[in-house]
Image (cartoon, rainbow, N blue to C red):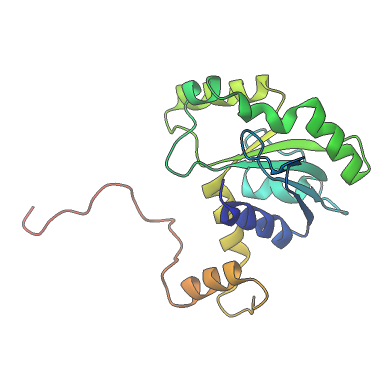
Length: 196
């Protein structure tokens, strides 16, 4: 997972009024990148009422209280059931060691385990099966990267100032100059060619 993906996830939660603390897994020799991914500990002091869905939607984020978040945004892949079944690292965020670390960092035992993934399959059967497999690993919530990006873009004003954050400032400029528009009426099929 790239540092950029973690930075985007962190800034999304910060835009939703969470405190966010990153944790980089280290062993005696330094950075341990074999199986461990950086974690993000998040906490919102005054969550909004509601019960977040297992597959988080943008409107679920303010209802979260505290969580440990792991980002496995393999942007070239979708998380089909075969991918979930064959990758043991996808359950790390819900492991006993990670939950113990979350309890220590957040000083609370009730931290949810959230896994951020690039995206799930679109077909209902494989999509549901992937979610069932994530749930069987002990994960409390799954968040797709497009949902996360949409939640950020919804909160960013094209006229605001986000100077401390190059990422948010870049998103703001894309909105300001019309490169990011509401996609409510756009369809996923190609436009007809002239004469058709």
